[in-house]
Image (cartoon, rainbow, N blue to C red):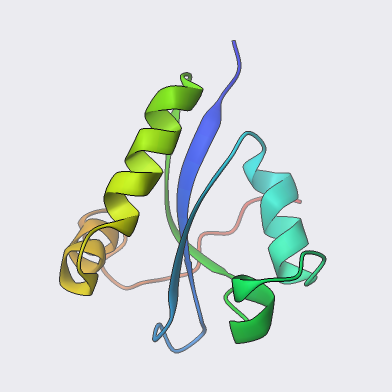
Length: 94
């Protein structure tokens, strides 16, 4: 069974936030951290993983990503803080 991840990245000072979806979180974090993909995260150096959730349904993952992206910043902050109150970087092996 395949896994899909909705994740939130931020900058080192937690000012800028990015919400994404992937089927390989470790690979995607490597790409973000090494600036391999042009775009928002490369431009703003958004590389600190602070939240993720896993599902086995791509449609659910995409819907959840869109839902979170539509939230105001304070609601996104509350989501992160529900699992990671100190906004520590979540380190995964990659």
